[in-house]
Length: 288
Image (cartoon, rainbow, N blue to C red; front, side, top):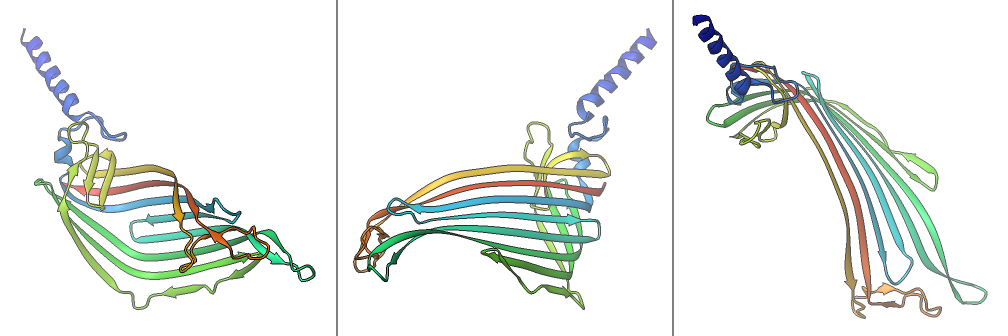
């Protein structure tokens, strides 16, 4: 009988541990004697991080009175990486502007107006690279406050780019700078932290912008954080442009051979399509 009671007691302990300590994050330890609130408390040091954001945006401007149309397409890639010592920011933006232009042309022989439509493509590229020595120490307290100490020393800057018009490319003069002596700056950020899903799994933490996202792993000595977002937007705005003799802000008609500047009240439209994707991961070590 004593063996039976002992077995039941052990089973109850195991069941309790499984209930309170089984993993919730994808890479959590299977069992833990400490709750998630207890495990998150302590001092954490950032060991590595990767933050990649890609933004694609297309803007088209047009109106309901003539064929003038401008389309601008841009692609922005931003990469922020930290290897435990050096924080690198790598930005590369390419903007392709396509202008479809209708404009009046007067014949020197007949003095009559005709209308040509031309397409011009301009490509602009700008690339910047910055490096700094970097460290982050984050104190997460039991009273749901936090204190982050950020130290950074800017060491290197590089920028380059080019512009292509009509198939002809012009390169911008590169800027290659190593900072000597480098300047060190220390920033302290304080505030409140909380579980964004406190009534559920306690997986998503918010401690300012320092530690924000989903905890893939929360152990006594290690945190692996992940934050993946996808956003898209597709919108069109319409603005009425009133013909006013004094301000001359109407929309050109391009239909009067004698007066190419004739304008009228019209509607100017802007169509924007944008997608933004971000993938962030970070690893922290320490704890309590």
